[in-house]
Length: 152
Image (tube, rainbow, N blue to C red):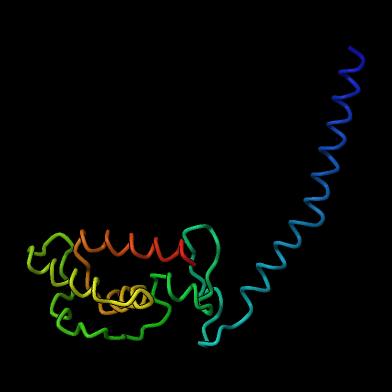
């Protein structure tokens, strides 16, 4: 019984020491990193807190890295880039479920003819142009981007 009590006391003391190390060193370090990240500016002139976008795996993407730019679906700027798809502008403002099968195929054709490195940019362009992708095409787009993220 006495041996179990010694082990319990030792574990409590070790737990207190580890907690103190976490509070003193690691939490302050994380706060300092978060403060530094939010006060720096990106190349595009946006404050980092506006340019940061969450990445699926829990990391932060500032938009300044090639990998982030290729897999980030959130528009960082309001710049419209056309990928030889100007005809899709006529679908601006339509609901995702209101497309006919021919219109869905039109979106799918554009998506499948894109180069892999252009897929995320096309998605950002569609969002900036206020075009809602058909549900089926949106699911395919997310699958393609997910595969791209795994390769990087």
